[in-house]
Length: 171
Image (cartoon, rainbow, N blue to C red):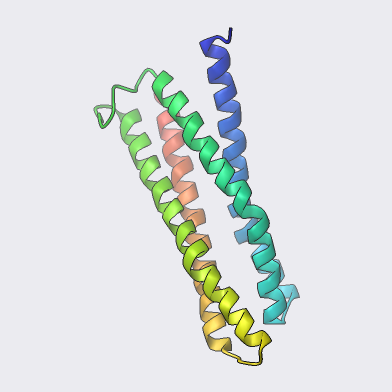
């Protein structure tokens, strides 16, 4: 039979791995992949194909990480001595966790906006370009918007880490 400390330890390990995958992926995209791809691929069609391929590869990992974060976070929260109940915010830990969760919800919203709005528009634009119908201004605007939203998502990931640190620092 598994003991509670063993379950909690496993939860922490999985939570940390999922955090590294999700936030590490964002950091890698924003600070390494996108700038280098833009620098090395002047052809906008090639750039779009590369970034789309990377997103297709990363998205399932990010989604699995999100599920793991939610499940392991619930285990950790229920085991925390500062957890006093649902929608109870009487201590610094619970307030930090609330703000952390708000930031995570914003991150999910930004990712959904990119996945269901911007990326399909970029794919449509690429199909039009492949058929000789160029709308480079629209494609450039969409790529800039995607890059801005990705950077904003990175900012919110830092907010998540800050509120996690605040919650962990409670004696």
